Image (cartoon, rainbow, N blue to C red; front, side, top):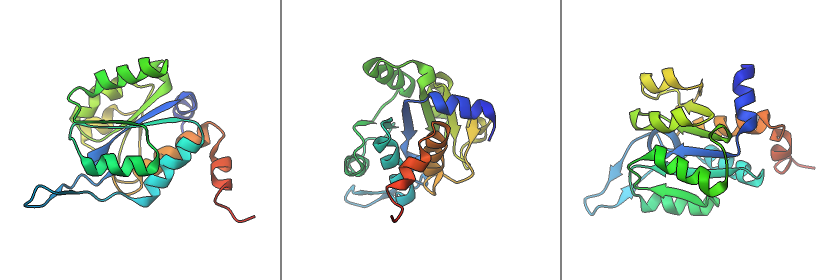
Length: 176
């Protein structure tokens, strides 16, 4: 792991994840009655829980409103959920102000062009492996896993490792 990435990750206190294409594979399954279905990877969910248990602030942000996403985030304990957001950079700035944090204390994980502006503001910008080429090119770091297939967990473990908290996060799950 590059030292500049570890240095940036060590400073992070707030991490924002895009939803479609990052926490999901980007597919949208819509029923004829308007019902929406999404697939989330359980490894990613546990990663978010480990971040929260370690005292980091976790946020999800999406341009799409989604009751399914709101329900999943509530089940995981994620308090900062911004759905139907047109300007993700403004939402990042709002959240930084609310939490009294500097931009270099934030990480943003994205996959598509609408994520470029908040990625440019964050101290650590991450693109998922199957993100748009421009997003990957402008990210500080690119995951090995694809969106919705463990990429979020990869980011969670990077942050915890860089902050010296990964072993403690694992300890809860290891048999005595």
